[in-house]
Length: 565
Image 1: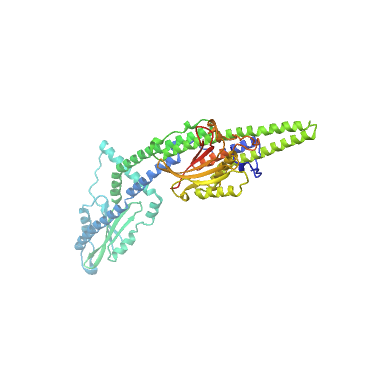
Image 2: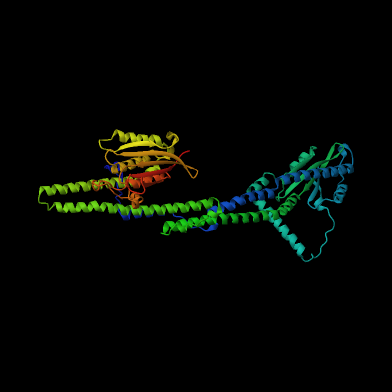
């Protein structure tokens, strides 16, 4: 049972693809090969790199920050400068008191100055120097010391080896930091100028600086003048070279914590890789198997137990694959049905054309020509309906779903049939049966395709209704399983439907016409298109007899759709 309207000739059919099968397969193969999925090792996976790098990036920042220890270094240098200043002022005060003469005749006593400097208990990393007013070196603490003893060093023990290893690690770290380009530029821009320090100190100023010497050592210096009353007799320069050693010691103490942090980050990265990258790789491999072979949906891993996005992805991928195989099967069945339906009129055409050549009378020729014309018209209707059926899904995919007022749509359909009704045609009526206002019944969908469903059902009902009969359309708003539903009924007064055919009438190319109907005037696609469109609206359609105990009373088609509450 199909729509008469869907049987009208329509020559606006998309042009077929005239490429040969080999050309289409070749081009399809080229398109598949343009973007092949590369099988890569898990260690070289981009997602694995992102996980590891995202974890290690913070650690690198922590390591760089802790190794540079800028704030600690700044505080240490300031404290060391204050310490050097106090020591230098003490030394200059003593030397000023031991100087000989007064005024312009005052001068330093170099021997006493050497004795004073020799008695100072300076740390090994400190150096004290005394210069005269001409910037000449008079006394250097590194050149004053006890007698040098010569002897054989004891053999290295475990403790000594540990000290050497620690020193090696310290200097290796220091050399690494020194080799950084920005650190080298900073050293070059901050070289020590001893002569400039002495000139400033000879002007009566205490000079303190943080510089780098010619050996790239980080030093802190204080230069202060030696005075007797107001006369400047020389300059004492006190230097410290142990700043880097103290900072290195602090860096070494942080290494165990950095090591544990790296270990924890690696464990976390591995755990994330196993929980994210491995499942995604399995899904990717399964998708490749499905794409390259004929294996079915059970090849898609099921990660729904994870209750996360990857689990949802596996479910959606399986559902997509099932839909793909279903669509492939539908296409194959549709192609087989089309071939079968087109073969019948072609066979009739061949038989009539062969017979036409041997026709002996005009009456026979006229009859055969009429048969050929009917078969051509039948093929035209069949191809038109096939074209429409094949475009339903594509047209629905292009359209945007909008709210549809079912009462208004059904009223418009009924008014169309009432205005075009001819003598003897069944009367089409719209009968609201719901207790609520039918004006409030809305669904979300595609108005033009859904109107086609109603027209197909009405045309089908009119085909089987008696002369001056009645086709009734009713609308109801219901609630089923706490879900709002809209129900549309289309009833006729025809002979009904055989119980065994209540489902098969929705199959493609199924036809059952009332007695007297012209053979071949229907393609059998109308109801199949109806179910296709209703399914796209997330609803369902079925047929039943108005009197289930017998076929009398006519048939009823029921459409059940989700309703906008």
